[in-house]
Length: 288
Image 1 (cartoon, rainbow, N blue to C red):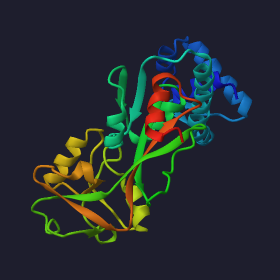
Image 2 (image 1 turned 90 degrees about the horizontal axis):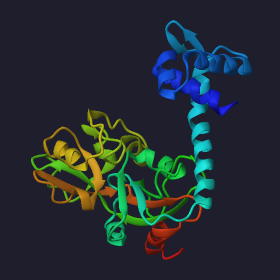
Image 3 (image 1 turned 60 degrees about the horizontal axis):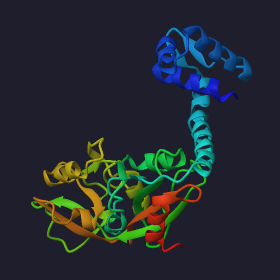
Image 4 (image 1 turned 180 degrees about the horizontal axis):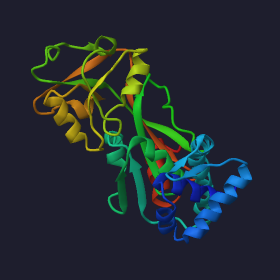
C-alpha cells in the first residue's frame, strides 16, 4: 500500500470528513477523494461510507494495521536521519510521570535538557520517531524482569532502577495501619484508574492473577500530584513507587507484600546515542 494514500485514509477516518482532512493535510478535497478511491481500488474493497463518513468493516481492519505501519515508517526515517545528522548539543528526554527515578535525576546534565512528560505508552513511539533522544518508561514487574514494551521499532532498553511499591490509602482508611498488604485482597476495593500517572489497573490484574480491580474514578492526566490528592481524599486506591507514595498529606503508603513486584524503570534509545544522549546513557548504564 502507498503510505501517502494510507495517511490520507487514516486522516479522513479520524476526522470523519473529506473536507476537514483536506484542510489538515493541505490537499484539495478532490485529491483526498482520489487518494481514497485509489486505495479502495488497490485493496479491492470499500473502506468508507460517504454519508456519514464512517469506516466499513474492511476499513476498520485497515485502521488496525495503519497505526503500526505508519509508525514503523516514521521510525525508519528517523533512524536514518539520526545516523546521518551531526550529534545535537542538547538532549530531549521523554519520560512517563513516575519514571523519573532519583538516580536518573542525579545523572541529568546541568543544562541543555528538554524534559517531556508523556503518557506511558507514548514514550517508545517518541523515541522511535526521533521526537525524543531518550525515553524513560516504567511499570510493575517481578524483580529483575524486563518490562513488556510495545513493538514500535527496534529499541534498546536498559533497567536503571527498581523501587518498592506501596498502596496509597487515605489516613482514615481501615487498612491504613496495616504493616503490609496483599494485592489479591484488594481486588474488590475502589481503585483509581490513572493509566498515564499511576501503575495501570490492567497490569495490576495481571500481577494479581486476575480480579476485578474496578475503577471508582478515572483520571486522564499525567500529574502525579493530582493522583495522590485523589487517593488521599478517598476517591480510590492507587499503587505507586514507594518513593512517590511516602509523605503525601492525608494519606498513608502501605507496602505491598504479595506478590513480589517492584516498580521498574527502563531507559530506551534507538540506534547508537550520540552527544549528550550518549553521555547520559553512559552515566546510567556504565556502558553496558
